[in-house]
Image (tube, rainbow, N blue to C red; front, side, top):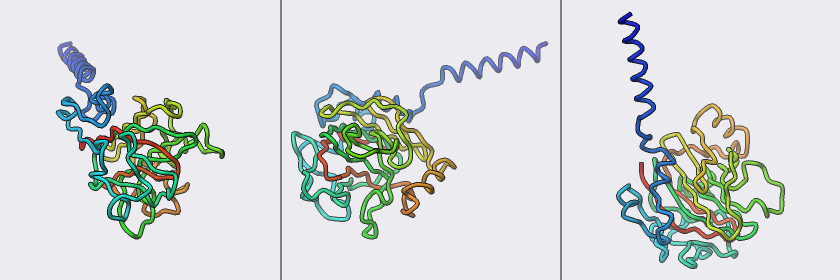
Length: 253
């Protein structure tokens, strides 16, 4: 009887410890709660700085960024109303801007605003090398797009918030053209979470059987180095349509 009671007490202890254990350190919802939505654009609050967030864009200059495989910033990129944006002239994925630094485990956030029918993306784990013409040849992409006004039929993995050509969004909490949307991208080892406006839209495990199958069966079958790198630059994509980015921040995990 005593042995049985001890077992019951042990099981109750385990259950209570599990129920009241603190939230995981890199839990995306906890990381999202660290961001101050009411702070002025392109600023870092004391709370955010204390939690390890860093500003990647101050609203005034391109410090910390350069064009993919080039020195400086492509002419098609400008700063407008304290936001990073591109003109509609000279736009091409070869003219994406990327972070000067590379990142492995991180949380990345930004706000974006779309024009009608606009298409862009946030690409990460990019290898910068002249043998690659485009960042998307190596890096996964968080899809940024006005899919509602896109003139052609789209796949579900092209909807705003998707992991492009891999995972469609499981929710669609996007805001309409002209309004600011908030991205949170968390790369915690092989576990990747994409959030849009506070909602988890994509979650996957890199190198899982499912990931390998999707990677080998679709568009990326023709790109042998897609997803190959676990550390790399982060890119804002220029797809020849106008999109604004601001409040770009990162936290290394």
